[in-house]
Image 1 (cartoon, rainbow, N blue to C red):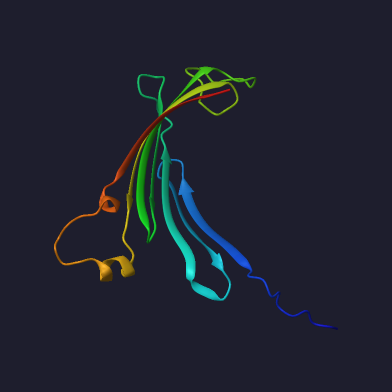
Image 2: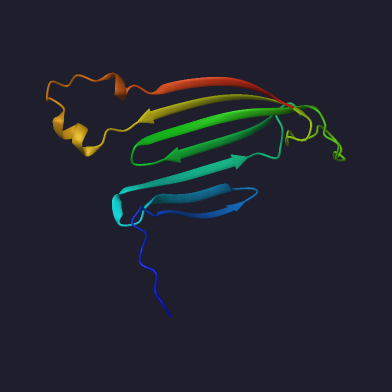
Length: 144
């Protein structure tokens, strides 16, 4: 049989390993990049937990955290189903699952981390750059 050579263009890859349980949440490790370029790869560690219990019987929280060599991020999302979807809802308040009219409020904090080149080029005067400040984002979504 005739063998095909590797393509001249770069070949990408994506690997994800996850483990989870309803009471614990989900931890996943994601790595993607270009074959043959180990320095270009991106690694992320993620944790997500959705609580089954609802605050005041209406609002369902979802917490997430993500860490990579380039940044750290954490968010807390509160979801509420305003109208249940077409499927039968169990007794009590329905879940905000995207089948009806849902309302989401999310707060997110993200911190960029300097790379080795930035640390090496930084002067010793102790001044912090704007890149060192975390960003805070809040958003509201109405999902139909």
